[in-house]
Length: 464
Image (tube, rainbow, N blue to C red; front, side):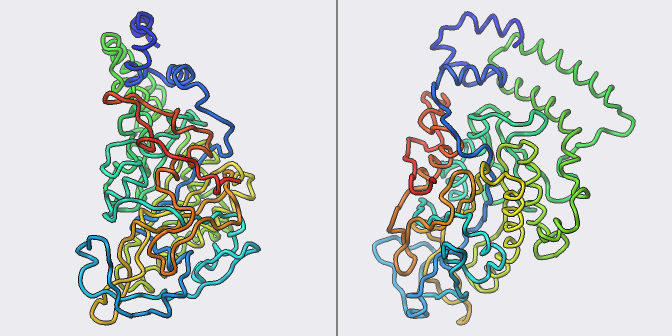
């Protein structure tokens, strides 16, 4: 800490330090010290050290992936009428029950229900925990994405990855603690899905571009040596510190200075992580790299494994769009094939390297889908958005492997067993990583804020 800032802090009361400086902490070291005093016992024994979040943006259908509904086969194309709720523009008009176009099988020793389209992932169900009881609040893509990613439907709050890195810090000072692997086009809601929100800027997700250089200006300009670059950064840091000495509460400038230093260190470490030439052809083939159907997500899954192996705390990889309002057999079939092999390879890789046990893998979308839909052109059918029923699964990180928790009703319209709001999933998520949502708070806009917004409960059924 610089001398003027240190003097400023020394004259603060404990209350001022806790309620004021928490909005603009000067360094990770001070942040850690403050957390230890502010929220004693925030960390409990963790089952997971790191997390990989596989976000299936668009809303995958639980009915066509991991939650079979034989009753829909009996009712297929019978007229359906919603009752007791306001219809959306998409759900208006004549509706029909829609059966799944896919067969389902019992996979693994645990006998998990999976669509037969999961040719590779079906071999890993004994390491997975399926949860069918989750509910969210929105059926609009942007607000639902915000809700799953940040706990707030309206955006502006920190993402799960930001909260995790705020609470736990990084395992590698040369890499960001929170890395995002987005689609070519950003998901609905854009970069706010991995924002730091009201937390210091250090905790925002760092997106890696899917094409071209993953990070702009990753390499030094031609003719610029590392020594010259270091001198320039040192001069800039000196000027910035002089400015900051007069404004010790300026968290944004402090975060920017930290970002410059991190970027400098990343130039040495990131290229080696992103370069897949060191991987064997067998490994790349396992992830589906080189196959047009699986190459894109295969690279993300392999990169996710490499990043957590190198100490990145939280990696989020996006795949989409699962918004299948029509032609669900073609649309969902293609999407499943695009992620099936890559995810299976990543789970195998993590397990073989001894990483799965303390790496939490999370798979979900922003909501589930309905058992009904209108007919497009008289022949094409799909599914509408459904906030009352969605399936997600977990692997590793202390979750209950080989189990299916919760259930939806006979047509998949609503969760009816072990039902929990997404806030409880978030609380459980943090708990597995050794964090207590009620203690992991940040003082902002006049109150202590937390990921769950106003508290939740751990879903004990999901924890081994």
